[in-house]
Amino acid sequence: MAATATKKEIMFVYEGKDKKGTKKTGELTGASEAAVKAVLRKQGILPIKVKKKPKSWGMGGKPIETADIALFARQMATMMTSGVPLLQSFDLVGQGHDKPAFQKLVMEIKSKVEAGGTMADALREHPQYFDSLFCNLVEAGEQAGILESLLTKLAIYKEKSEAIKKKVKGALSYPISIMVVAMIVSAILLIYVVPVFADMFKSFGGQLPGLTQMVVNMSDFLVANYHWAEIGGGLFGAKIAFGQAKQRSVKFQHFLQRLSLKLPMFGELLTKSALARFTRTLATMFAAGTPLVEAMDSVAGATGNIVFYEATMKIKEEVMTGTTLAESMRNTGVFPNMCVQMTQIGEESGSIDKMLNKVADYYEEEVDALVESLSAMMEPMIMAFLGVVIGGLVLAMYLPIFKMGGEI
Image (cartoon, rainbow, N blue to C red; front, side):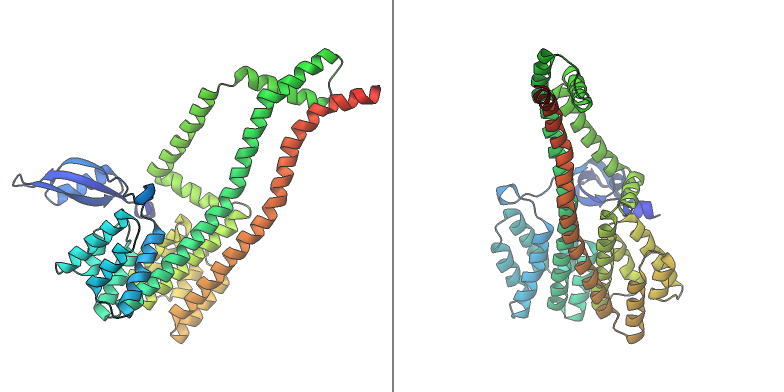
């Protein structure tokens, strides 16, 4: 059940015919082309063509990003708080953006609202940009007459979630990029530089030091077997295969997500970022007056990890039977004791959204501290790694020269 629910939804465009033979076109989200075709058949439409919708690109080749959606919520809330009518707010926000694709998106939303639809329904027609959490909160705001307040909460939520994602990605990408550069430099030295030294050593005669001989053997192997086209093709093929496996296989996605939480140093970072997203999303839903059971689906999807997804769905099942939120969280064995106790205090005091926001603030600060400490720890480790790899190659080449100098 969890595997199906967490599979990434993709936007498809379709062409088909209804029972009367009338041509039908539109957009539909689904896990795969086959899933979309099945939904269309249930709706009485015979699918003729179904394909993935291409991404919308803005000025300068830039796509519409999460930051743009957060800015949209922030600006709409500001306009409405200032007393600007809703339709005029759409004009001001859309025209003030530098991406044509974003301007078009805002104008499409405006036209739906202008035709008599609700803002929430207009947003639901663009699920690639506005998720169920966003749409549900906007709908709650419209019904309660506090749309500007909930748009502000959405803006804060989107901004904080995006900030955490960027910090985690930055912490993970830095050491990987350094290691890739080190491997490329090492390969260049072994293929182009070491053979020059090896020819020079042969003219000297005598036996080479063990480290030097090992490096020369590695160089000989690479020179005899490397082919840039094959290496590049192999790496590119491996990347494509990995990407396809990650996209198409839910089991592989879940394996990677479970493994990521067990990584040394980085596992703690990913765990705390998931806890921050869980508590922040749940606090936002509570503040909007969304019932707990209904909120759980959006919260589960926002965590970004199968371990927390399954834990959240287990919480939903227990809450439906009358168990308190705090007790349900404790029963999963996933949430730290501090997180559970703060939730319990919030339930008992009737201020659970405030308590969850405090927990989210705490874990976001913890993520910041972990990123800083990881950066501080990684720098000397990376320097040591580069010193051992690159320095070892250079030392291996100079050892015979030092040896000859000592014998003279």
